[in-house]
Each structure stands twice: as C-alpha cells, then as structure tokens.
Amino acid sequence: MAEGDNKSANILAQETAQLEEQLQGWGEVILAGDRVLRWVKPWFPAALMGVVSAVFLMIYYLDPSVLTGVSCAVMLLCLADYLVPTLAPRIFGSNKWTTEQQQRFHEICGNLVKTQRRVVGWWRRIFALKEEKPKVYFMSAIISLLAMAWIGQQVHNLFLTYLIVSFLLLLPGLNQQGIISKYLGMAKREINKLLKQKEKKNE
Image (tube, rainbow, N blue to C red):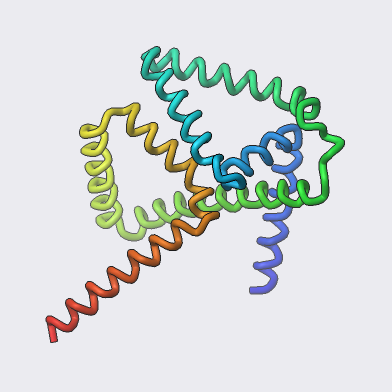
C-alpha cells in the first residue's frame, strides 16, 4: 500500500513538474488570475462579473454565427499563446519572481493536475458503471440528458452559458471564503432534521 502511495505521489510530482515547465511563460498571468479568482481584494468579484457581463453583452449584441464565434475564440487563444509569454515578463517583471510566488505557482499546477486526474477518474467510473450495471447506467444517462434538454429548452442558450461561466469563475472565491461549505453544512443540517422527523413519524 505504501509503495502504491509513493508511486502515485511520484507520478503526481512528475506531472506537476511537466505542467510547470509548459506554463512557465504564463506564470505571472496565472498568478494574477489566481488572485482575482480567490478574491484577494473585496472588489475582485464585482470586477470579474463586470468583465464577464460585458463580454456576454457584446456577444449578444453582435450575435455571431457558431462558426464565427468559434473562429474568433480560437484566434484569441492563438494570439494569447503567442503574445503572453513574450509580453508578460515585460509587464510583470520576471526578475521580481519570489519564492512565495514560485510556491503558489507550484500549488496551482498541482491542483490542475489533481483536477485532471479527478475528471479522468469520473470518466472511468462511468464506463465501469456501464460494464457492471448497464441498466443503472442507461437510466441515469437518459434521466440526466432529459433534464439537461428540458433546462436547455426553458433557458436561452447564451444566458445559460453566462450563468455556467459566471458560476465556474466565482467558484474558487466562494470556496476560499468558506461560503460553499457554510451553505452545504446548512443544507445537510436541514436534510438531517427532515430525516429525523420522518423517522419519528414512522415510529
């Protein structure tokens, strides 16, 4: 068991080191984005939502076709991939890179690798469920897809995308501030109360 844990830790360390090397040119930008996403300053959530709202309002106003939207998004990614590693050291000053920043960058890369592993793990579990319990897999897939189709029919595509993007961008800050754990705890307490009341009625 200890050997397996050590092997897993070594693989994790190797993957983290590889990701750090790949993202080295983006280091300053990633750290700046991390500060915004974790709400280091109290006005960061409002600024984040302002930028997201402005982008989605622009998309709504321009109303591009799917092909135009995808092309523009890929073009922006290509420009960022080319310009950011070149301009970031000049803007942020790579000579000011401290040990604390390097440590935080290492933690971010480690978290990204762990998230990737979780997603792959969930994907494998779905396929394992398909092999082991095909009926459960089939029913779960159909019900989930029907629910998603119904939600997609009720809510406008762009607005739904806006809500999803906003939630994902606010999630790290909500987690950092303890808001998610607070409300999850409240929900668990309420569910436990309801279960206890039901047990008393059954008695």
